[in-house]
Amino acid sequence: MDLRVPVHDNLTRRRLSFRLAMGARVIREGTTLVDLMRFCSAMGYTLHGAPGNPSQIEAAGALARASGEEAVAFLDLLHWSILIKLWALLPVNEQEFFRSTYALSLEERDSRWPEAVDSHCHLDRWSRRVNFNLDINIWNSMTCMSPLVDIEINLRAVVTNFCDPSTYPDNSLLETLYGVRCFSTIGLHPKGASKYTDADIQKFCMLLERPEEVCFGEVELDHSVPYAEWLGQAILLKRVLSFLKERHVLVLHCRGADGDIHGKEVHMCLLSKVPEPRDFFGYVWDNRM
Image 1 (cartoon, helix red, strand yellow):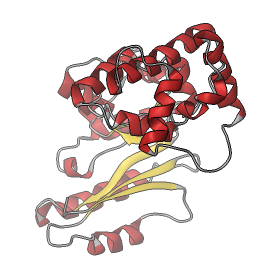
Image 2 (cartoon, helix red, strand yellow):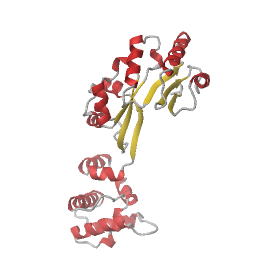
Image 3 (tube, one colour):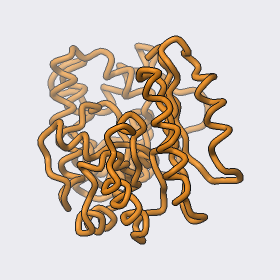
Image 4 (tube, helix red, strand yellow):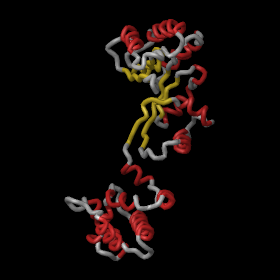
């Protein structure tokens, strides 16, 4: 168990309450920390190797002062591998009780969850589907609507791609998103190549000049559409790449035809059209997915 969170009274009380509640459900009401540790030993739930690290020893000392028991007698109860074995003994409804009652505090989440950056998403498309506005409260919206409740990370920033002219952000939204660590890229999705107007291209170019825009795209080729549309995509790509500047990171969309699961044909087209050398972020659709 990661205990890098500074020890204080509230945290100690929560840790003590959690273990006593675990003991009451796994063994019986009134189980002490030492009783729970004896149970673990009898079940073979023991650690092999060095004793607890300094943060665990400090936390155990705080628990000992709060419970009146000897820290050395239950030190192993501070280790994640022991707790997860006890956790496995609980029925599902009891696990839900512990999840809701002893949810990690913000301080604990910040200390133990890995940090991540979502390098490619489409907040405009997502917000339409879930009926949320893109505004300064976007982080709260994403937290409330996330279906991946079991993926525990600290999401530090988002790179959101606007590739549909109908949902391009205005200057105010760009500034708002930039201020809350949602960094925007501007592109033209290849599937819409036959529909884009000169006004769409002009708006694309204007947004690329914004200081918030450091990425160019997504642009490229998508050959999952009928063959008759491929030429239009190639013409659009050649046209928009003429606006690419040295400061831009190029974001590429690349997808092969239905029978070309590895996209070999579209990759060959890509290599002949993208300028080099160039920093780029590319992603490829696997047509089996």
